[in-house]
Image (cartoon, rainbow, N blue to C red):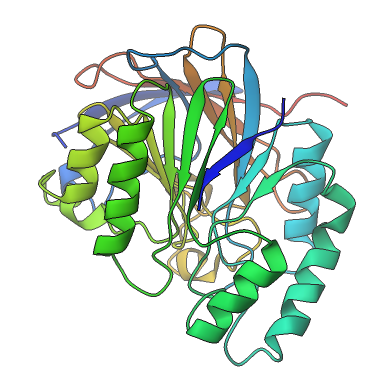
Length: 321
């Protein structure tokens, strides 16, 4: 079954147990930090009331390629993702370098050639600020991807919305209106995912505020996950019933974090998200580190029970080949 296009916090303390050759524990209280960070994630979230998926399925979310792309990483991640045969792939933006990196059409040709071996799997493209920064670049995006800047689609009873905040920090009024109308039309579908590039929700949630329209809409229409990119650093937090995730770099530079002495434990590693929806509608999200030579192929499995309960997670080694 192929996807079908339809239309263009609370205070959290975490107890964590990492099991990698030996056990160790860590406790994080997110109000003391800029955001709530995990090195990788497998989230389990019960589906909201509504239509459950007709069949279990898996899909992948691929993060930023550009912002000083590291050669070879993005291709390796695409190859690994496609070897796992997801139902479809969602990209989170920044496919090309954009301004100052040469002819836009040539940049898009180079990118599409890079992923051409893997295009037997349906792909939904989210616009990033390196992709869309003017009217001309917006036209280049839609022309080369064959997709609009915002769209929604269904798969097996689940609903997916892709939005565009490439030229603004937040979602502007037209984007929020599109989201509200789309969610209202698809209120009975579950689970629900919303994707856009810039994670502006980090700031209000860091300051304990859920009083912003995106979150109000997500709560009202039972959105399960909001997923963004842009920062190149993996981040995850929970606000009420909504889980917010930043997928880190899938090839973009990690220098900003590494220059500060940060690394895997702070979310600075090459990665992608692997998301499974089981037959009951439960959602399992795993952040997967790139395989060697670009990473160690680690995954950390995490299960969230209730918002106020401790979060237990465990590092697992990559599967043997």
